[in-house]
Image 1: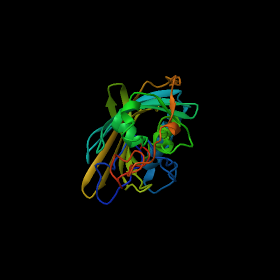
Image 2 (image 1 turned 90 degrees about the horizontal axis):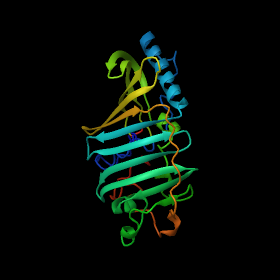
Image 3 (image 1 turned 90 degrees about the vertical axis):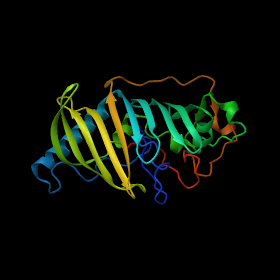
Image 4 (image 1 turned 30 degrees about the vertical axis):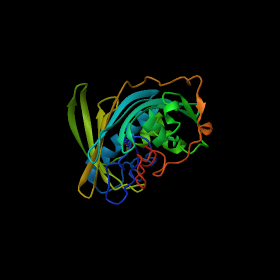
Length: 280
């Protein structure tokens, strides 16, 4: 997800993409389809209709109390997966990512503007900068990260409904009627603008008939012939995510942590640092 989910805007270091296509649903802070309101452009009536439906889909998404999503990134590196429950002011993500620091597995819970982190040793070292010597002792503990802490900009984006709306970027160019397991739907196809150091690409969004709620979102980037695709599937619309803050959490500021060579969430490789999450 993320892009996704998440995850996110993608930073490309040289032509390397495997470790840099990270969590595509966790940090793309751009506004979807900026400058492409219905009635603009020269693509004809079909393009205008596609852009109007896209805006309706984002509005329906933004107005939901919450939803579930699963984002998977493939190509250009190991598979990365985010399973999340988004709410209007908080939510939860369970993330698995293969990086040079090792297979990272961690959970993020956002409550009251504070992110609570629980993860294995590679995730603690890479995402939070916990020293290798003390990381084993902190494995499995809940750690609170506030907005003045270094890793906050990496772990916080992508969790709420509004974040996920921002990460479903698309400049629609066409629309096609399709059938899904849930009934009729419309597939919007178009481009994903270049942003935050990431190259442009293509994207599509499947929108349910009637409700205009998103069903699935797919974005594809290509750098030096290497393709990376993130697919996010949505479900559980209207179910608010309201997790409670874990008890006994330890403050990140007490762990003696500091930014790793590649930056927080950089995958353990200096210079290959994904932007903080795809969204896409």
